Image (cartoon, rainbow over all chains, first blue to last red; front, side, top):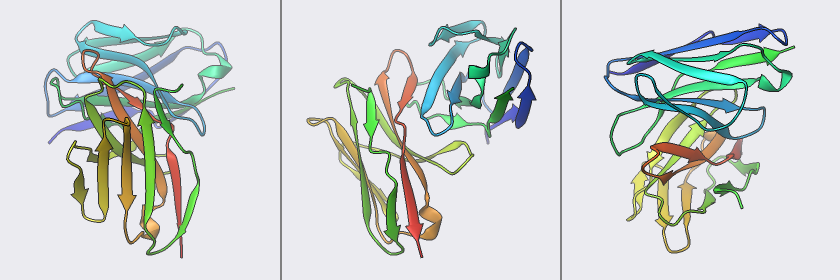
Length: 113
Length: 111
């Protein structure tokens, strides 16, 4: 069966520090991969999605970037965090076909201080 | 207008009650519809897909009205464990293969 791993679960970082969040999927190949952010009490905002290695689309201009160095690995990065980057970051995957159901990792709660 | 709109609630209902949530979406060409459930400080989890003919999964019934561009979720015989936020989710553009999430409706089932 397919599983998705996301780490770390919690992160506290100072303003201006770099960020790297990692997500890996097991048990499937060529998944679509997604990064979302959820601010406190708000809905999910799509940040990036990827349909293949090195094929990444950015949804919202920001100081974050994403990379997909391997088929089942998706990384969210920042060179310098802002206070506004605080939130709940969720990685998700879906089968590379039309059904579109997405399955989420457990998320990373990021606090930028 | 938001792409996917939901009443944020909260809906406070007693155990055993029937409760219904509605959600409207903006794009008439949308193809896929889902309800997800999100517990406090947890990731969203798929509750059920929504099909044109309506579908049922135990105490949960989902309906789609394409003409009016809304979907609904009915929960019968509410349990305390149903307390959560319910997210309406729509694929607005099949070419993009990305889902758009509503902000969620919070349900609190009380003893």
